[in-house]
Length: 468
Image (cartoon, rainbow, N blue to C red; front, side, top):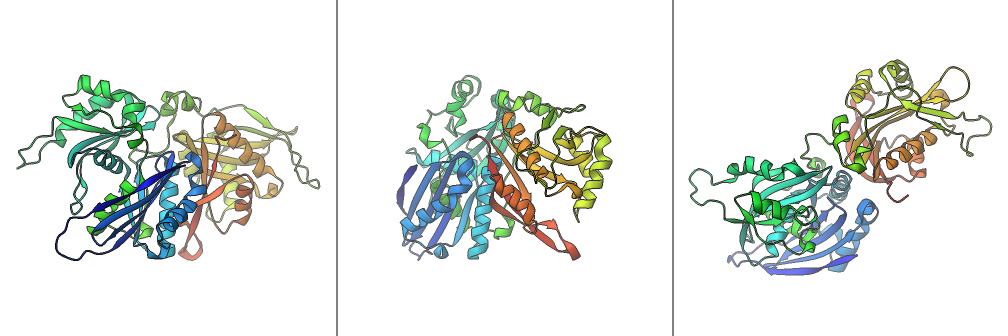
């Protein structure tokens, strides 16, 4: 655990009374979880901040960290005015955790939320670590899969001005294309019409990719702007919630708070899932995910000891789903769910290269389809989109065997976590997921269709896989 010191900064005296503001800030876009309580009272800004490197355990600790931070600052949750959260770009699961917690607190407390650009927060904390009052900060962070998140900001440390502006909006670029990709869009970051001042001859480098991926020498050698020396590693290893809160305070003053129901992470990739070509081109940990195999069975699942004695569970075989399986799959889907996937949903999943599997009885005789699953790969994580067992075969441990096989398979191929959505009205599924290690990390409001035109929330659940 790395507690961060409180900060106290006097605000500029304008001669007018200032409002008292208390903001809770959550930063979860990377391996670090950071929580801050920021107070602006009587012309003074104070932040109490706590950060821990939790990785996939953020959902387990973040609420406790909120209680510790607020309790240490002597502020009750009911006394905060808004919740700021790290909207990304960043880790898919981390962003979902932060957004869901911010939403949940917003709903519970009746408070608005403030989404903050994660790269802007990194740029802000880079600037405030210097003696400068203004600078252009080029932020580059490791997006994995041999890619970077990058953005360029013009920032100014002014307690009463907006935090700054994005000269190059956050985007994802290939690691190999870092310099040429930025060079291609750099003119757009020049002076606007009527502005004579060009960009400064030097930019501040911010974000973890400069040090971790050795970008500094490459940039200096090939680009017309030379970056300043790197900050200490601790200054750009992760988004600090106190920096996030300082940006959020300026957005609060500008009236940019939103209703908690409208909160959403910011994704800058064209799509979050990986297609088949991207999986082949990804680094070693992801390359093994490969193309979904078609054809004969690829593994068998023995009957586990917990099978119901009165109704012996058959051994299972698993193979990749193909177009020829869709009639049987859709028949099960329509029999099991009041709002089933369509044949087109399954066909689109196959065309997109999602992992799609069918599970059959491995006993002698013609294969009998018992269930199926569809999994979407995200960088280093997977999203379980559909897991279904034929109605006549339910409550025999088949769903558990299918889920355990899926977790072993994706963990072997580099996944660090699995996440899913489930209806709160489906206690059988919830019990299965909880018994296999899944925990609820959030709620997606009005996610599922329901009878008579209504909508039902979805529980978002997650299970880390990299600790086994």
